[in-house]
Amino acid sequence: MTKQVKLLLFTLALIQFTHIVDFVIMMPLGPQLMRVFKISPAQFSIVVSAYTFSAGISGIIAAFFIDRFDRKTALIFCYLGFIAGTFACSFANDYHILTMARVLTGFFGGILGALILAIISDVIPFENRASAMGIVMASFSVASVVGVPAGLYLASLHNWQFPFMVLGGLSVFVFLFIFSFVPPLRDHLNASKLKVTDTVLSFFTTRNTAISLLFMLFVMFGQFSIIPFISPYMVSNVGFPEKDLFLIYLVGGGVTIFSSPLVGKLADKYGKSKVFAIAAGLSTIPVFLITNMSPMPLPLILCVTAFFFVVMGGRMIPASAIASSAAPAQVRGSFMSINSSVQQFGSGIAAFVAGKIIVLSPTGQLENYNIVGYVAIFATIISIFLSYQIVKKG
Image (cartoon, rainbow, N blue to C red; front, side, top):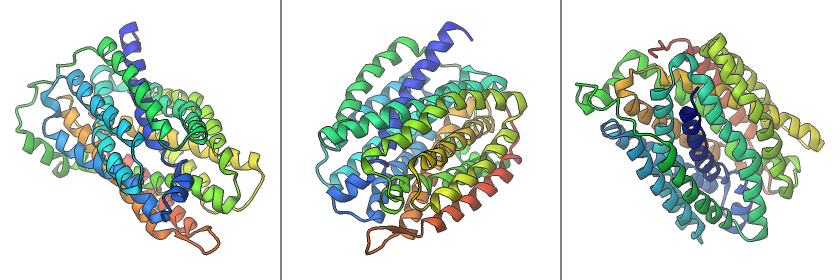
């Protein structure tokens, strides 16, 4: 791997870090937001879903033109929009304004995720792609170890808006890295003779790409029905101190800093589908334990949640590599944009459905979280089956 490629992956990891922190910080802020705005679990799930649904819509729109532009130009435009959305969140002062700010951030954040995967797929050959994705996706771990605890700390010092203000400032700094280390990427331009509309429609009518999209839908549903309510459930049902929530992300993220690159290497060596199946199968264990958890010692809770982080990250790395190989290079940007939309819609639907299933009891506890866990396990089993049906095109 050349120095130029390493700098490119580092820059993509920084972009991923900022937009992952922006996204995941909402979950641990859940107890505070529900208290400050006096909203129900269902209303909180709407705030979370607002980002994902907006990202899903933008991904569909972007699919019609994303392959017409230099990847760097598209990245710059979308990251500027993301920065604007993040600052908008920092100025939100009620539930409705925050929801609209999340819609704005999600609109650009969704395209960013697709662009990152498209750039990696353009630059890195399939046989080494999972390793590269493991490096970039380790930014999720860093976001958990550094970003989320720092965000919670800043929120405790001032208010819940302050982390978004700091993140917006950091994103301006990352923007300079894009200019410096992301090269022009134009090899995909004019490579396809298909009309854009025909190309996008073909993703849903061609068996391989259609299965890939369905695969990612179930992957996301299998994890995002659980994730938004981990923090509220831990506080209200398990008795986990709200001030110590950062430990869940610190420990879990710390472990995955090491596990994510390792999973990428294993996926390249032994096969993406095989590693995905193992990680996805193992992920059903912590899903069951978390959604049925009762009060227990803090160290034991952290062991379970750390295991959850490892296997969830472990399944997303090979899953992303599998999805990136389902379409040929000349239409990969459009496909990954649609793929990103499916992921976002899957996440949004999962959070929304979970919010409808979970109810707040008179004592302040969350009920029916175990039902959400069983739904997530069922979705995971389906995703394992679908992973073996996808033909890898490179």
